[in-house]
Image (cartoon, rainbow, N blue to C red; front, side, top):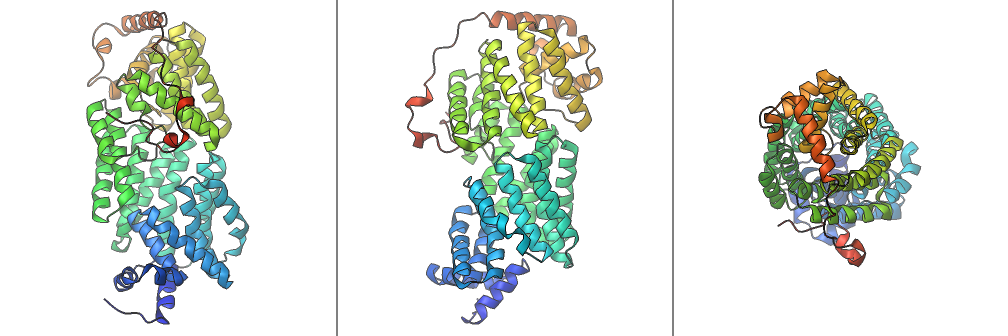
Length: 482
């Protein structure tokens, strides 16, 4: 281990932090410092905090170091140090959902950063907090502002590193706005830049994770499975604690959408989380037919969302609850929920989710015999999916979607993409109702079955959220998987 005397350490840590380098000798020295000594030197604390966050996704350990650096720079009146520290501080506000606090702290500083790279870093933090607030159009503007700033950066290394970070994150923004091919392209660009040089190897676990999500959200499930497995293995190599769990949970999402529900459940149990998806166990419970549990989970999600987690969270909970109502034979209740969710998605610019709401709006209308709504909903979804080369939706429920695609074929609604979806998502291992009979017969049988289901009595009442202690509902683990 190389020793740094008290005069050398601040300079070495500052140089490494500002150039985004991680010299092994310096990292070893930081690891050997007592916690109090580390926090006392703000550049050292900031470098160690960034390292823990970006290289190892140890967010809980990184946060107090970054907070200490901000406080110390402010106490010293070191405005330059404060700017660099705030670029890390705002990222830390994303993970505990402190979006308002993050924006309040960073917006007054945006015009203070003269270096293009640092300005891009600050806008990246703004992007994260705006996404957290469901202000997706503004978030995309912030991310594109960051990329524009990087175009002005004269240091090729910082420019490349900044582009890797911003491109892999803007992929999520484009997904929300329904620009699915653009999302995949951005994630591919980030992964390509990360692989171009060995000195950016530490960015690859995150890049492959985001690329895997982009493939999954587009419905390219085999590609998603391969890329997420790469991300998981790289996360193991780099000791990425949270990223490893997120990658495993995302693999569970892919398995679930491949109808491998037992394998998906095992992945969730291994991960011990639901990755970045806020609905917790609700959808896997629904897919497994555990409707009472799914209803409870949805109601908890809705209660939490209404406490202030953003319009998108409310819409997600409403949509999932609508799927529970459909599975329970109550299409009228489902349709009302879907109409409300669609309005929230449309108002917020979440086109990907709005298309999903339209698809399931058509499913509810099919059970109710409201043909005009069926044609409108399935048509709007299929036009979106064809435009963006999408083979899925936000929550893929094949037993609802299959009949809608057959209905579209029968009624001449975007038939090319309806047929494409049937061939790619149903023909290899489709449900029994698809395997026999003509498409016309199967569609008619499905309509009749759903009308019958709507006449069934309701499920036994589920546990109301009002009796639950609030502390039990705060995190994503809303129910124990068993």
